[in-house]
Length: 115
Length: 115
Image (cartoon, rainbow over all chains, first blue to last red; front, side, top):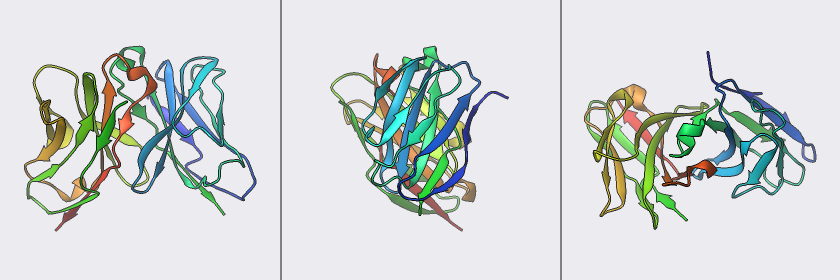
């Protein structure tokens, strides 16, 4: 079945370590997005990519990095520079048609906890 | 830039009672509006969307929403809730023609169904 797969679902890391969250989609979507979710804060945009080998910063990009080497994949690295990385991370994508409206399709999320 | 305000962070309702979750938006241009639902530790699922046409929009699971341009609102309603409707609900907006950079989300409303 087509969809968006995020892994791992749960991840623990020590302070000072970088960690990479995986996002893979087989929907043939062009655009992909990373959002961060904190309790009572809604979703905030970290990075997005509208095409392979190109990406843009969202509202809270500091301390994060991404790459888009393949259409299907958009991994997010949470670096040691991110001051408060404990959160629920959501990956989303959209087709070229749906992108005109902004409609997004979401993965199941990855919960990162810094010990 | 657009913004979304969900006026209630939590809404407790008895089972089989009606419910309304409020959403107001701010934008200087025409918008597209969305409601998403999130069950615990899962991604977001689209409930319904307003793109154009009829201001009353019907979605999945018996939910509906009404777009009111003069009041800049897009409230979500259900005439009779079920225990399975317990979840977090997010209102989101994108500006017409500018959807490629993602959606702007409200902070969410936690719907709590009491037996």
